[in-house]
Length: 115
Length: 109
Image (cartoon, each protein chain N blue to C red):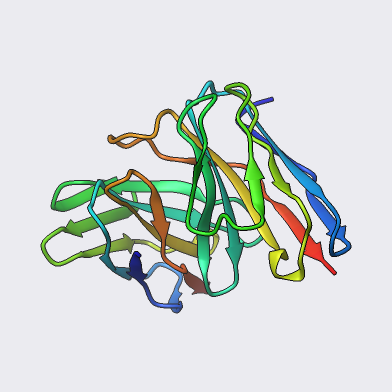
């Protein structure tokens, strides 16, 4: 692996089903993030983790949960999917969550459709 | 909340220059980023400004005025491959990124 990967690439899901989007990075970055991208709204932060073992809520956390058991993995779970969660989901990571350039590196995204 | 504004679309001719403006109002400020995103792909980092002034990186330059809450991304010698969305993002006082909706740039031959 080189960089940050996400799985699945795309998924069609029935409303009410549980779904976990996977994200793995091999850069040993401390901070990881989940965003959703919707047309006309840009990227919005769902949840974040500044370091393994800690998580925090972003701008649009309702209906989503995350865990950060180790440095590399940051799964996003939809407990009971609803159509409004249809979106493209991007996972990102950065060396740390503080100042400096510390740009975020993005995974290829997961396109999720909830019917 | 955060408020980041940038134009929705811009069109320019190959070889020309395009300037994408971004204005922002955020709770605290810890830097401004520009990302490029080709259709169907992930955003990729272009530039970072934290102090006022111009940062130049090859054909791309980014400018910041913190007192005006204003930045621009300048793309020179436009190439067809520059057709993409350009995202302005501000890192706030909690070190979280807030993104604008993005500017879609179309380069015509």
